[in-house]
Image (cartoon, rainbow, N blue to C red; front, side):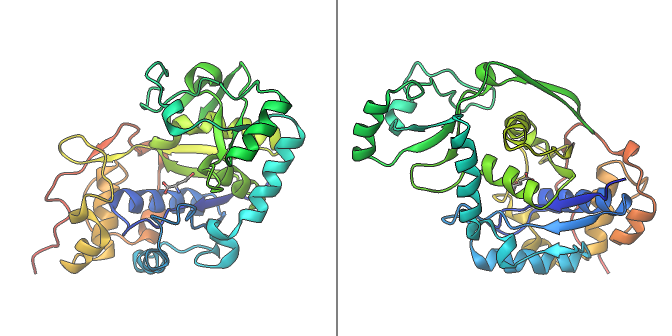
Length: 316
Ligand code: GLU
């Protein structure tokens, strides 16, 4: 049987919040339970938002939580910002297959009032640049740097998520031709994540349900790159009492604020495990203790509300 290779792939655009801790914990538990090797990859493509100090802090926070990895971390081969040559090679491979095309549309053209929307509110590209002639492209290349899009086929992609069950998406109508490289040269998440998971031999992807709708696009890329896709586990999202998904904006629940008020790593892990259904009570637990009792059947599938006062430190 092939060895499980899991990964945790955070974007260092701020201090880790509880949602990130939950993803890291679950990636760690699923991978360790399978006796796998866990990779820590830093997804810092967005250099305007991702800062080296956040990466250093992330590594320190994961160590503090006791969520260990076997490969990667804050190292050159594992920071996406330094892997552009490799993404270029993957893009070239797709170009040779004739499945990508340059898109010269400006922001205004993309956001034309008639543009249809996806369920997540983003625009579905109309395909305006898909059928330009070689001559038209040549003229436009002289005027501006294009983005590169993948021409999606007219087909439905289906897969079975290990936690969310059957998922299917008609790429042409639900998603449209999507960007692999932006016009400013930055590679898109969809390409980088598949290229890296493929290169690193990842067989198990555990991540938030916010990325479930991206998975069919990624499966198409696996197919085109000729790589066997991993198994996917899309976790429920953590939400505040108002129902909004926790994000880096909820600073009272980031690890900086939580650690300052004196909460321990075991208290955070124990309470998260209780919230997501893994433990009956919220007693403090180490990652190792949670692993000893880890039963994925108990894990909640629907989004999880975090009570505002649950993550206050125990009074001495
Ligand atoms: N880097 C993404 C994030 O921070 C996760 C990507 C993934 O797990 O596929 O949310």
